[in-house]
Image (cartoon, rainbow, N blue to C red):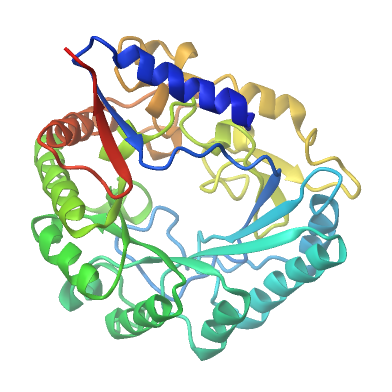
Length: 406
């Protein structure tokens, strides 16, 4: 929900008033700006389940199933979504439970159709992409032509990337990914680099961050490996909460020193509290390769866990995006921090809101109120150590501390 400018200013003023006569430490953005009053639609599209990598830990086991989105189905959905009476801006995000650039022609058609439709309807488009970074010259040119901002997955130096994210053929993907990463930096289209932390690279996070800094990367996303998909088959010992939290704190301090924006579990303390974990419990609109609509990027087909909750079914021509699957959305929107018993008393309850139910390993449980102690403990531990680092004077780029008068 967008704040009116006056209300947002009043909220900030109230925050400062609360500091008077207090020793409270508050961390705020340097530039306090109200969100744009222009309404923006965000459409996430999964072009395919197919993938040219065989990542050792892939949550979706991508590549085992080869299903592509029909361009005709996509055009039908796009026609109803791009509506200037509802939105003045449109963001198209191409995502993967597969690699979205694997079919360059389909990738180009999806972007071009959106750009054309937006131009016709006087809606301003923007484009983002989550990719494994193995695309070729044609996709690279499309990215440059449409100014597509990209997030690339890359897990570390040559031997780590090769071990965790090889091509399906067994070849090393590192040279291709690094070359594309450098091209995106030069084009100023690299949004961030995503690093999945395993026992192979956790001790090398400082080396990884320094390397990315030398390459001109300004934003890094660090997350622990999920015990899902291919990772469930591993007998490898997991990373303990204390060990991960310690390394995350060190990564946070280093990123602060280098001026790199960090994203990950420990950064939830800087997130504006919403009471929801993610957009799946709000207004996510995800198009699957089957042409169906989902609220969750991890639910693409009927056989996926929680499909009865997150998968809304095929798009109906002429339907209203704001009321489509209204009953299911109402049910999902009830998963808020104040409704989760397990979150009561947690200092992060309105930032984390129980975490992601799709990331809970083990037996399937249809109850969306279920939380998992391990990720909750990990998030709390990371956030506590990040707050400790803040009190020592380590601040992420673009933030300042305000301390009340004693």
